[in-house]
Image (tube, rainbow over all chains, first blue to last red; front, side, top):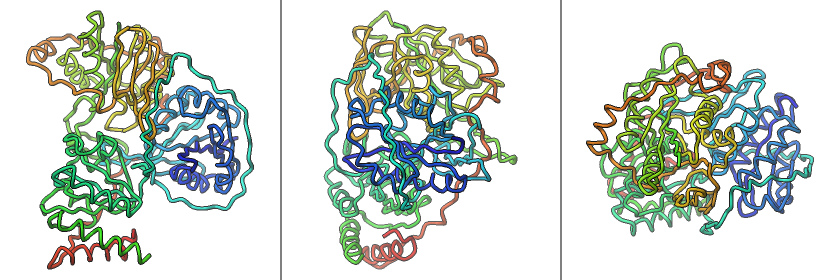
Length: 326
Length: 263
């Protein structure tokens, strides 16, 4: 129906990813004002139990449960999402700008001949039309765009763009049976998931990032312990990853991940443009650097000019104490 | 084997960018480079060519005339042929339109393998690879970290997936998007640069590719820019003062709790 919205739900380790709940929360504001229906769309295998949570966040939960959907593949997921979009005709399909979202949405957009906006960070309703906010040129410019009216709008948003609001709805559960179409030209020969239980760096609320000033890989232990304490992640600058002190997965910046946590702490990070491009949408930025002229201080809210290795143990202790108090 | 590399010329990360007074267009300082992630695609294509001998590498971009410089860089690195699809007067920012044009080019050219960067660093869209593959009806793999096409029929790749890596075998023709870590892009040799300077790069009007003009006209775009703005500037940094590091940290914690309210 016109003005209905799909949110494509991602999940991990049996739980719904925060980015999906953020999108449902934001989309709810839009459908409420337009008097339309918000659908949470879950594709997978043995995922019906996720619906209980999703019902609180949406008017309707569409579940497609099929063993072919056990692991994400663009071919099977595209075929299912295409069928659902044709049947329910949402005017917008929203998803996370995640590894999966970035793979799935373009494929589906092309199949539906839809409009696509990727890596957006905001959405506003002007009367009955939706404006999408998207940073360009590494955050130097912000653009507001709209999608052509008669096209399905496929939009991916950066995690941590919106707040999660519990709506206490009691959405209707719809179990759709759609047969996923597998592309025989692709065979998966191995999956290596590393088994990390850590929060995804793009979804983390807290990131403590080490730069060249950390001096060596062994000094990242204290960052790890602070990240664990705060339930967050350790990030790294390009110099650190290029020196093989940390994995590429940790890299924040133009050539790594774009992150926007609630609190970012840069330790011995100089603040080169290619790094700040990947973190300048963080809510609060703290920089610790002994060089008062380090460029990172022009991006930070708070700064400590001092020796990192003296500051970090104190910071850890103080954060522990702050945690205990709350 | 026919390898096509799609690349984009993007504003250098250091380039200054201004919003014009109409709030609807940008003025970009004249500093442009080949998109960071596309360099891995060019390098990988050349590596395949060096190994298999019968491979031909064609680099192509859809963009304004100035983008020819990015194609020259690819020729200097070792690409055989370059084509500029000139976007003058046509839509070249909208992913839907751009991918239709690139798919039409690949269809005309004939292809075994298409490589392109996983995303452009100016708009971070990461849409073109998957969309071009869909318009061509070929499989794709996003963000590859290793590639082996020794038999010319199948690509064995390792790629980034949610929470880890996946190994996949995909029949050619296929489209693969490239990620940092795949290889180390070479710095062109002086002989390559000389060759690139002399290379004649055709400047092609994409309307000859068989796409109806109305599909690549600016009015065809799925996305319309309403306005540009400069991002909200952060207030100047507050440097925590104190006699000792401990005092500074305590000041920080207090500020994070009471002012920023993030603890």
